[in-house]
Every structure is written in structure tokens, then in C-alpha cells.
Length: 324
Image (tube, rainbow, N blue to C red; front, top):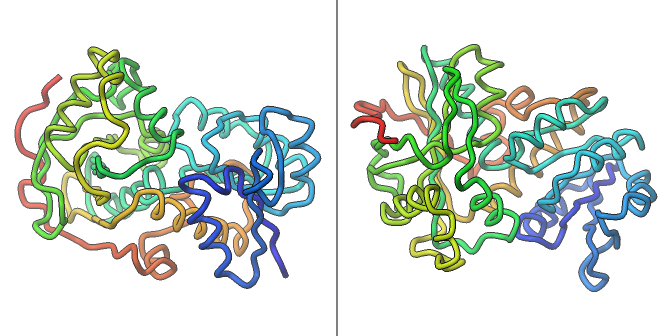
């Protein structure tokens, strides 16, 4: 049976590689959506609810890779009988998605998404709180939505599992990295409000905390500095020094660290989003669900071989004191 998929933002940084991934699956027919008539298969302005409502009723799955965060997109999709998949890391938006009455899949992508699956596996293999470290290459030219999300968190706060209020890009810790995590030496990482850490804390029953770092110490320290002086972002170039390499790791207090590395954050997010479409095609969901609830590290790696999950004994995984 053919599954019709509408990709919102289908010609964006994530949308282009996602369309290519979906085109490889014979049972899926994918269409890109956006305002540009020259690039979109389906022309629609997401800020016009009426136009969007008329479009989504013809599709089985709607993937939001546009960066446009409006819960009405999900509500209208499920009302029309489609499952809704969202590529977002914004905690407040995910809270709204969790209240939708219908099939919504959240936490899809590199972080959250892959990081969530690794954290769940680390919890299965170990005990105690789980730390997630996501390293993103400063040299990758990200889409405008990703850039806006990163800078939008400057100076804002989010709740820690222990009840404290954490300022984004503070709480610095240094984490040891596997020797073969190319491009990433042992170095500092800062707390960041990726949405899955809150859902994982609830679902796993242990504190889960996410730390973000860039692939150079200078860039990471610069991000930490900007949270106290957000105006500094005006002098930061769109493309920083560094590579397009990324790394995702998770580890509980005991047990091995699980990690994956690769090149191209947008391409990795697209590969995982394509996998998410296949997961809900084969295993229908009926309510808001997080990706880590329907996917495992083993099955994800089998489906997407380039996401090779490796284990590391993680001796002295974290060293140094927290620096606020």
C-alpha cells in the first residue's frame, strides 16, 4: 500500500535530503511543500490555515521540517486523518504537541531523536542519571530555523530535574571523548534546553541532562559568553570555524557510553526523519509519542547503517567541576 507523505519545508536544509531519503522507499510517495512555486510540489503558505487545511487532507503522513512551530499544523493534520511527524527541539512547542488528540511523533532527528535513543539504551545498560552530550560542527552552514533556535535560547532558562532553573549555555562541564570521535577532543560542554531530556526524565524515571558543545573550544566558550551578552550574536559570522562533523553520546552513572558520529547535521536529521516515517507506517500510533518510545538503538542502526552505534567504557567520562 502506497503511503503519501507531505514534507513541510521540503526544499530546506533538512527537507532536501529528507526528500531524497524518502524517494528510495518504493512504498512511499513524497511531496515537498512550501511557498516557492519553482521548488515546491505543493504550494502552501503555512501562515494561512485555510490553505494548509485544504492540502493536508490528501496525505497519510505530514512531516514538519520547516522550522515553523505552530501546534495548529499538527491539529489540522490529525483531524484530516494524517499522522504528524515534527523535527523540532523546542520544549514549549513539544509540550503543546503532547496535548494534541491524535497521532503525533516528536523528538525526531539528530538531537532530539538519535540522542534520545542512545539515552534510553544507556539507561538499559547502566544505572543512575543519564548525561547526553551533543557535539555540533561549527563549520556547517545550518538552515535559518536551526540558527534562530540556537540564538533564541540565549539568556533563557529551563527546569532541571532537581527543580533548579538553569540558564541556557551555562553549567559547563568537560567530558572525555572517545579517541576515534574525529574532530572532537576532550573539552567543555554547556547545558541546553533540548526537549527530549524532559520527556526522558519522565519516561526513564531518572534525571536526564543534555549538554551541547561545538567542535572547537573557542566556539563553545563563545556560545557560553553570549548567554550573558546576547547582543554578541550580531558580530558572530553565520558560518563559524570548524567542520561539519557531529557526535552524539549518552551514558548513565554506570555502564558504557553509547556514541555515534558522522558528517552533516541536516543529512543525519533527514535520515532519522525518513526512518520515523517508516516506523509509523509499519507501526501506527494513535496519540502523541516520542521517537525513543517506538525505536531502539539496535533497530535504528539496522535501518540506517551509517548511524553506527558504538560502545565505550567511558573511563573518567566526566571530569572537572560544574562552572555556572
